[in-house]
Length: 80
Image (cartoon, rainbow, N blue to C red; front, top):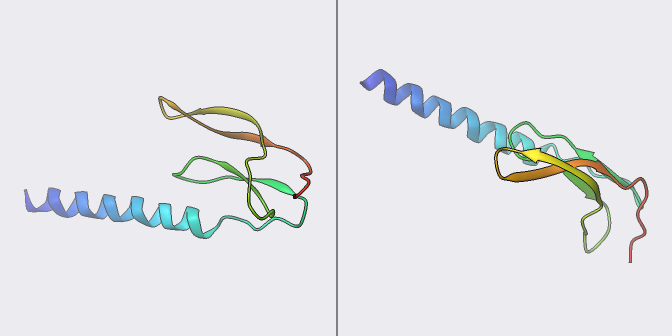
């Protein structure tokens, strides 16, 4: 029983570590660029360098059972 608890905690720590890695490795695009950030655990997203940011997703694909994630992004964006 004690070994199962330790194994469960190690599993949760591994998932938590992968989520932190996903958030920390989000790339910073150049001005006017929109890029697809591929992630391990979290859904893929499109990232742009505009302030305020906006969604530049061109198409989506399924993620999990009920959600979607970015499949492709616009090539170039115009920041307002």
